[in-house]
Amino acid sequence: MTWTEGEDLRAQLQRLWERGDILREALAGPSRFPLRLTLKLPGSADITHRFDQVRAWAASLSTQNHVRLEWHETRHRVQGTQGLPASAWVDSAEDAVNWLRKRREWERFVALVCATRQTRPQLLAWLEKRPLRALELAEVWTRLLAVVGWFIDHPQPGLYLRQVDLPGIHSKFIEVHRGVLTELLDLALPFDAVNVAQTGSSQFAGRYGLLEKPTRIRFRLLDPAVVLMAGPLCPDVTLDADSFSRLQLNVRWVFITENETNFLAFPQVRNAIVVFGAGYGWEALARSQWLNACALVYWGDIDTHGFAILNQLRGHFAHVVSILMDRETLLAHAVHWGSEDKPSRVDLPRLTAGEQALYDDLRDNRIRKGLRLEQERISYGWVQRCLQNFLSATNNALPY
Image (tube, rainbow, N blue to C red; front, side, top):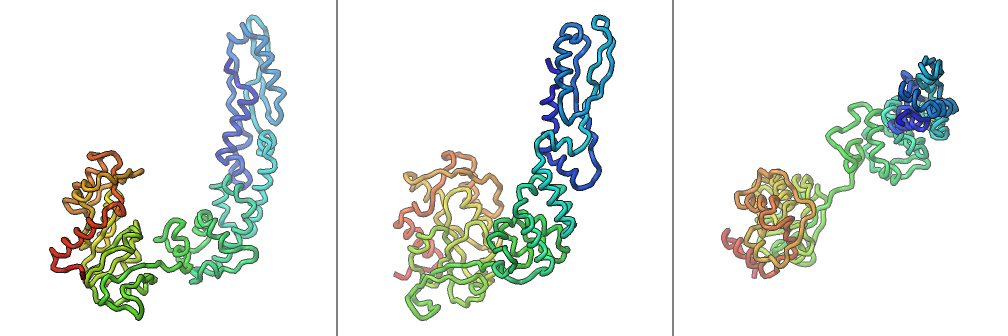
């Protein structure tokens, strides 16, 4: 039998609940109730051959609470006139909530709607869009409204998040809820109080005018003759990006490497520094316009993401060259090959012909599937020889 049972009717309501449609009734918009449910009925052949089952089905359906049945009389040549359900209705959201046993959730959501209507009515649109998410946040909703209110009173505040002073709310709370607060603040704040160029949870501070923790740039002097400060020769220095951008270093070469061990063990080079790279994301380094007057050399992993990072860096400094990211280095260290879990497949328009050929071989698995050679697996002797040959070709040298 494929006739609609009571649980089938309830399942239809459950699907509406899972879409948030029933909770939206609390927002006083156009109502879908009374709601007619889909009811698949017995046919004439069923009444003829399964009459007892049909009668039991109708009796069972009539016992369902919170659903109203409309009946119609059927005249059958064998069974005579019979009253059978013709349609099934749920008359109100109250009936739907009670049938689904969602009374507690319903009342909690109604309380959220009331609190929001009284304090931040502009956020009712978010409740209508995300009612189930709002239920998940019910315990903290009052605090979220308080945070939104603070930003309305302090647009583009120019403070650190730690300085947002609200009773019972600490900065960790705001950090944890950055995603939902972004949605709420975008609705509540005027357009000129939101920096729409800053997107994603990681740029929450910049989007709403908070001060951000300064990006740090770490570098080492590679030439003892270059003096930055009193102290040890070739110091390991970390500066905020703004201070780094205002450096006045008399250096010709700037090497960038992604691995900390390679950064620390990088050979000394005349008129040079080495920068500890940042992977994807070169905006902080790009502030340093003085780097345009230096020869920039990038050393990353020999894998698809290594070349993607190089390609991205060239978007800021087109004159960057790569070192130790060539086919000869890769093949010479086959014993140290590893695997790249999620290779990049995108086109990289800023690679040289040689880099492009190797990148294509890696992303198309022409040498081996998911092949990568991490930069720290390259022998130190090989690094020294390649670096010496590279510098000799440009009339520079290691200082020893």
